[in-house]
Image 1 (tube, helix red, strand yellow):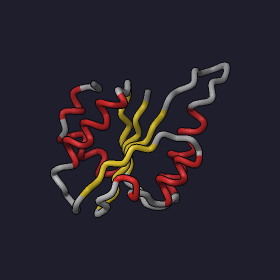
Image 2: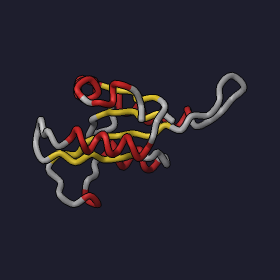
Image 3: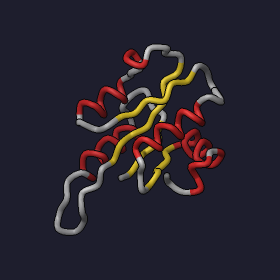
Image 4: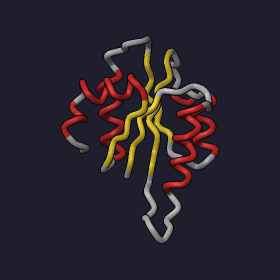
Length: 117
């Protein structure tokens, strides 16, 4: 299992590449086995978990990718770290892959960097 940590709101550049990677990874071929890749992303300002969505989340889910949302009240919300840890604990990945400065930083300052649960 792989978790890709990315903050994105639209499907451009890196977000588009990640969605394509997730779709392709679940297809085994003669050279590599299939991989279960899910995405963890962030939505700021939404209070209702069912209303936390954007173009990136919808595009991933339209491709049957498991997209997990970590809510943020504001920029630099310290509550993100325990919520991120709880999300990763539920998924139990073998690999955590980060994309972008936010993901790199959160993995660095969290206990997740000491190994996947």
